[in-house]
Structures are given as structure tokens and as C-alpha cells.
Length: 156
Image (cartoon, rainbow, N blue to C red; front, side):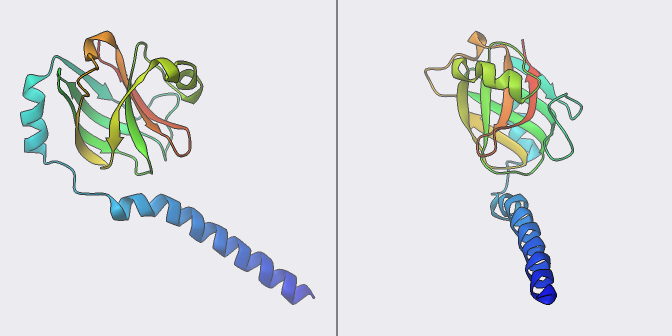
């Protein structure tokens, strides 16, 4: 009986670790190639606003972070830098800077989603025509699947 319990416990732990690693590694394995630094730099020439994502925000941690330069024009958002790998990232514009999950959940309904972020190094997203970035003050990278704050920055 002890051998059966030990077998079930050890294999259950191995299964749980494998599942957790799969959730973390799958987005990395299926992520498309991000735009080159040259493409992002070219996109950012039209920027009206810019901001810096930093790793040291209160809501960020060693698994949830972003680091790099965000540029916002009337038609697109470009980012040159890196994001921690993860599933189902989205870029939101908010009226105020938020620094963690709790703050973002309070303003999420009044924020706008610009689009899905599918790469972890550099991205360029088109801003929907009905959204004016001048009406907002900050950008937030958010993981929808796990309701996790990744990073944020004030751009005006």
C-alpha cells in the first residue's frame, strides 16, 4: 500500500510540474517572430507619445515584467524591448497609470484594448480607428488568461 501511495504522490507531482512548465513554455514555442528593431524604429518615427516599461514596478515580479520603449502614434503602438513570456497578453490604454492587478481591475471597464500581443520581443499593434490615444494617459500589458499584471507606463 505504501508503494502505491508513494507512486501516486511522486507521479502526481511530476504531472503537476510538467503541466506548469507546459503552460509557461507553450507561448514561447508558438510565438511568431516579432518585428525587427529596424521595423519598430521606423514605426516609432510618427510617435506622438513615448514611455518606458520597467521591470521594477510594484505589480511586476520575476515571471511578469516588461522592459523597453513604447511609442504611440495616432495609428499604431510600437514597442522595442522584451516582455516575460506568457499566454494571452493584451495591450490596454488607461486614463491613469496603474501599477498592479488590483488597480487595473478597478479601471479595466473604462480602459480600451488595443490588441493582442503575440510576441515577447518587440511588437507593433494597429490602433483601432475609434480610439484616440490622446484620450488616455498610460499603457498596460495584461495577461487575460490569468488576470496578471505584466507591466505599465505613463505616456502623458
